[in-house]
Image 1: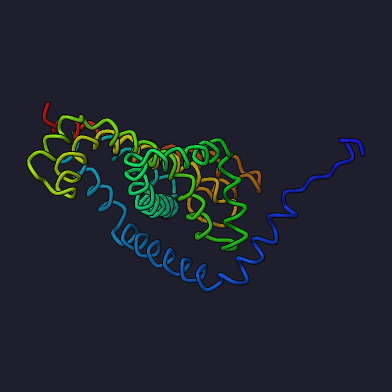
Image 2: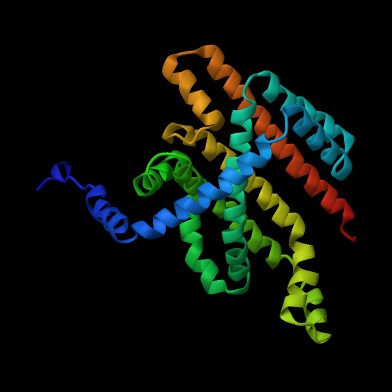
Length: 283
């Protein structure tokens, strides 16, 4: 048989696996959906509860206190644009989606990164998987998420979590690998417990690299959340999708600029906290 006549379809092998999972693990997936929806709903309520001007003032004040005045002014301008452009609710929904996805991604990637930094075999085992995860186009993650969790916000968050884990995991491993060996030996020589070494020596020294990983996780999660508007996740991604399907240039342009504003806001605030943290570290 000629090679051109071969018809290899990976879906023929993968589809039964998803069918088995939906049949036998439905209860688990339903519990995960309820948990994610509850957490996301709580975050959205917190963000949308105060009036927009109160939220803008609170973010600006926090940025001025914890970062600098320039970041506070920039945050006010970016949030103000989201407000006056008519996408305040969608912007807060997008920020809530990113926040929940990043929290869960960090909760998964951080301990795995520490384990990879301490166990070389584990790092060698997951490195090929991380390489594949970082080269797959982001929208591909939506396919299995939708098959398992149907349409809505839950598959968007699940796909975003998976997409955001690799950078945080890699930089966590790098950060703990870069901790000076003499500090670790000093802690062991003084009889410090492993938990004390972790929180008093390793974590403070790895913090700059960890914050860089957090920044990358936030930005990659935002990119996925925007694409997730295609599966009914809501937020600014849904507004862009609506503008495309209706061929409304004004709507698509305003939603696109609001996405840029949210991306700049999250990037500048996370980078500002990173720079502030670096300045406070002992030299």
